[in-house]
Amino acid sequence: MANLKDEYDVVVVGAGIGGLTCGALLAKEGLDVLVAEQGSRPGGYCASSQRDGFAFDTAVDAVMGCEKGGSVYDTLEELALTDDIEFIKLAAGARIIGSGYDVPVTSIGAFADELKGLFPAESASIDAFLGDCKALADEMERLMTPAPDLLGLAGKFGLVAKFLFGSPKMRKYGGKSAGEVLNAFFKEPRLRAIFGTIVPFGPSAMAPLIMNILGGDATSYYPRGGSQAFVDVFTKGLAKHGGYLALETKVTKILIEDGKASGVELADGSQIKSRYVVSNADGRQTFLDLVGEQHLPSKFVRELRETSLSSSSFLVSLGVDLDLKAMGFDGTSIVYNRSDDLDEIFGTDLEKCYMNIRMHSLRDPSQAPEGMATVQLHTMLPYDYMGNWGRKKDGTLGREYTELEKAVAGKLIASAEKIIPGLSEHIVVEDIISPLTLERRTLNSEGATMGWFPAPGGKMRSQKTPIKRLYQAGAWTFPGPSIYMVVPSGRNAARLVLKEARG
Image 1: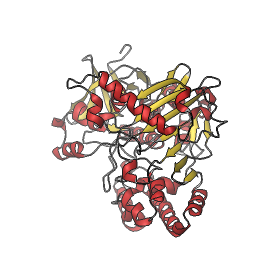
Image 2: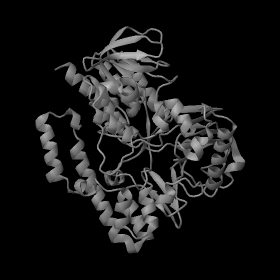
Image 3: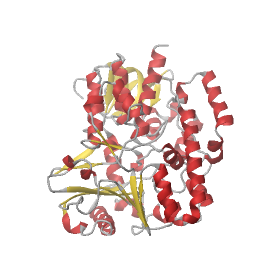
Image 4: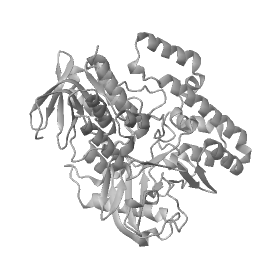
């Protein structure tokens, strides 16, 4: 906490990508910015870890919007950072393997042709579904550009008109779950499994999440140097434009005076005054812990408590002495569907649940020592799995937790051997991350990896808040989770501050 001043123009709580983006853009506009991060390194879920020469990404698999004109590229260009990072264009966004199919997700047209070849009886349904996905994606782009929070009264009336009279697909599907829509379109359960695992929220999530990704037909990229390179470039942008990043600086309270945010209090009891505060932290904790219920409308508090969180993750990161390229892999991440039933895929049976197999060192050899490779096995398991992962009543973790972690990892590795033969015999390094680990590292409630759960008919969380001069950025607010979304979120938050600061 050394070198902190008593006052800044803006304090940003949390150095995730949304917070770093917001802080860097505000600093570029001449504001005095502090980004306070409770952890020992920035990046949140975007950060990577190092182990014996292997680099493992915590959560990010690929990034969209990195081409000229994309939201990520344009933000980097605005910060004069485009020469400071290189993106590797991926040939396919994913490869989906299951019972009788092995399908690369390249362009939507090629993807559709592959599926129609596999399931000719469903050809008309495939075309109809993807046609609706394209129409819905076009509608969503029109509805969300520019961000609703940046619109004036006339603009908001126009947005309502766009929704009522120009968005028939959003009106049709906005209140439906992915499972409902997929069941309506397809009789073949394997098709439902393929489409339902492209975006891993599960069948109870709102349908437009999956449909928007499919309809957008966006190209995926991987940052050279792994997701840490993405963190590093935005950290550099903050410093380059005069902002200050304070690590191991935990904010414990957002100060409120006369209904307005006026600064923050830190874990050591010291206070920092500011004209504006932007929270890139957990959406529930921002208000219930940092602000306090006494400053908030009762309806708002009730909604915070009742809204469900997204699931957490379990990640097994392996350094292996295998030649994966010689085995036929090219770095495309694999979605391995071990069931045809979406409810089972997004359940907790370790023989059937969702599995994503990542081999990032094939994209970027610097991620592993020469002659070695990285393999990561990712699934989604809840925070309360097996009695909160064997945590003791006093909150401590003991032998039961360690044994459960190892058992879960072992089952996932055994299953992955059907895709990567001999995997278990070639492990040099093993690192395991559970939902409890994620909660401890990021302070996200229950280790939620994608913020609020996107329930059908649920509302998007505004970046404006009930507290004047307090704004939100990141995965817990508009436009949503994923790097592709949190960069624009940070950009929007910066614009909201500038709009008010400049009158």
